[in-house]
Image (cartoon, rainbow, N blue to C red):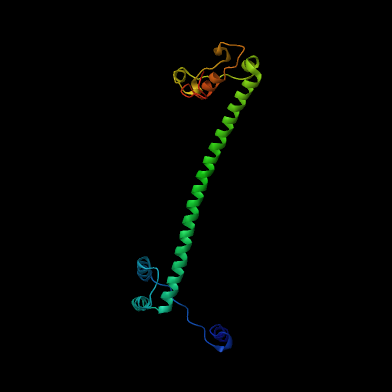
Length: 179
């Protein structure tokens, strides 16, 4: 059994293994963290002073600083990644909202094109009129709350494009000047 222990304590070439480094105590870590937060780059004189205060070799202090800089860089990358993911979620939500709006506008455009192509005879039968859904909304002047029917035009021979446009977008806006 002694030969087994003796074999473990020596490496190839019959050189003894280096003793394991002890873990740093909480107060040692606090001192290193404070020093790191003040300056992430370690100067030789500061490294020697920290090593003396901590009672560890200067190389251990240098390695701790190197590892801490790597952790700091990884934390920054993760933070940036989370911000990018959040921004991506916001952009995707905005994209969905815009796609719905485009779809609604395409539907409205299609409705207007059908009214222009098929005229007054088929528009009342195939296309719904724009109207409000309640008495409170009916008092509003927004386009979605206006009641627009083909019969409102008063002229069955001519399609009221200006009135249709006004009906769809609101009474405050004109597509072109009236003559």
